[in-house]
Structures are given as C-alpha cells and as structure tokens.
Length: 189
Image 1: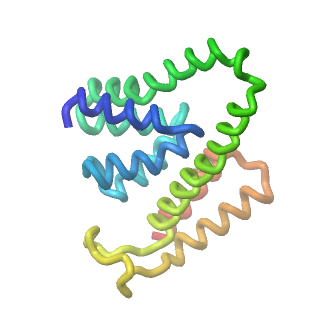
Image 2 (image 1 turned 90 degrees about the vertical axis):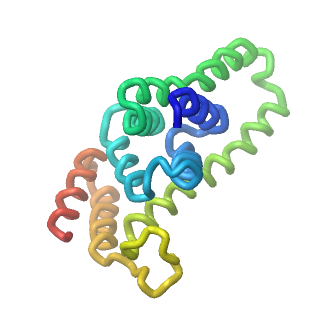
C-alpha cells in the first residue's frame, strides 16, 4: 500500500466513524486486516492493546502505529493525518452551523440514530477482542473457527474475571489493571 493510499484509507475511516476510537476499531479490523491484510488478527489485537496503553486517543495511536509499520515515519504521519483530516473539517463545519441548527428536531433525531450505531461498532470491537483473547485458536490462521480445535482459554478467562472483579471492587487505574493483566498473562502462559 502506497503512502497516498494509506492516507486516503485512514481518511475514509475518519470520515465514516462517529463515537471515537473504539467505534473505529471494527473499521480498522475490516479494512486493514481483512481487506488489505496489512496485519494479522493477532498483530491487530496486540497493536490495539499497545495503543490503549500509550497516551492519546486509541484511534490516533492505531493509525500512527499501523502507518509506521507500513512506511516508517512517513507512514505514521500519513496514517495520523489521514485519520484526523475528516473530523477536523467536519468539526469546522459543525461549529459554524451549530447554533443555527442546535434545537432542530431533525438534528436531534440524527444524533439519536447515531447512538445505537456507535454502540454496535463498540460491541463489534468487544466481540473481536473477546474472541481473540478468550479462545485458543489453531496454529493455522485460516482454519475453520467452528472446528473442535477452537476452545476457551481457561487461563485468559480467569485473568479476565480477576481483572473485571478488581476494576469493579477497587479504584485501580486502567494502566495498573493492564499491568496486572500483563503480569498474570506471563505467569499463566
């Protein structure tokens, strides 16, 4: 994929996504993993985890990392700029017309319609990451996932349950919980 194609691919993702970085992840996965094959599903999941750990928005971090993995610093710039260009111009247009249309029933209806779509995109990301972290996959990435060789990874389910309980019962920060998860993953696996 050329730098120009990389830029326009991320522009398309940035233009089609409402709801932030987690809503972008299914589009990243579909376009960059399934369609273009730039990353394997496992690499994509790992890159998303790293993007969540680093400061900044997860979508921007993903665009930067994916761009960098393809074309170095130029790719990082192209991916990031591509992802941010459409929202920048959309925000400029919305800011100019917001006061005029703020109380419009049509605008309220549009925003109410976008909310379930954002929820669906975020749920898709949840399913993708749950599937990639809680299931044991065959070594062949192209294997049939409904085959008996796919099983629940008990160690990862235990880590998930413990961290979920910690998040619910304590006030530990996300980086601390991710660190606990990483340490538990090293011990379990």
